[in-house]
Amino acid sequence: MNNFFTSLLNEVNTVALDVNVVGGLQQAKEKFIEQIKPIVNFVVLPIIDIVIIIILIFLIAGAAAKKKQGQEFSDKIVPIAVACAVLIVIGSAPFWMWSMVGV
Image (cartoon, rainbow, N blue to C red):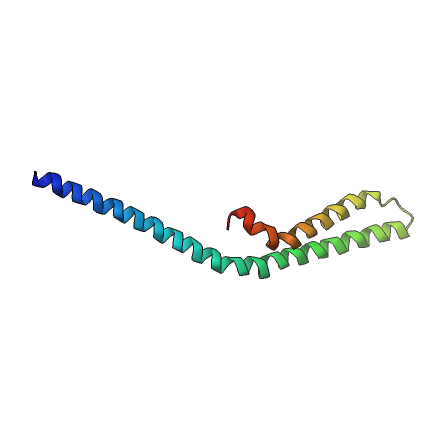
């Protein structure tokens, strides 16, 4: 009978420990997200925006050079439109991205 109570007490302690571990993991996740959000919003996304702007400048310059030479430049219009769309999506990402991720 004593072994039964000992095993029951051990089981209760294990369940309490599991619940405490889940709470600790949740707190660690919240702290991680709290630290990573400003880095993503103010460092990573602006760097991506700058790279896309540089690509967009080269695409527009290439299309202008082709037009100036009298060549067909319609093959440059789609990449310019895609670069503009990606720039808009990445530029507005801090406003909608975190709610999509579930934060």
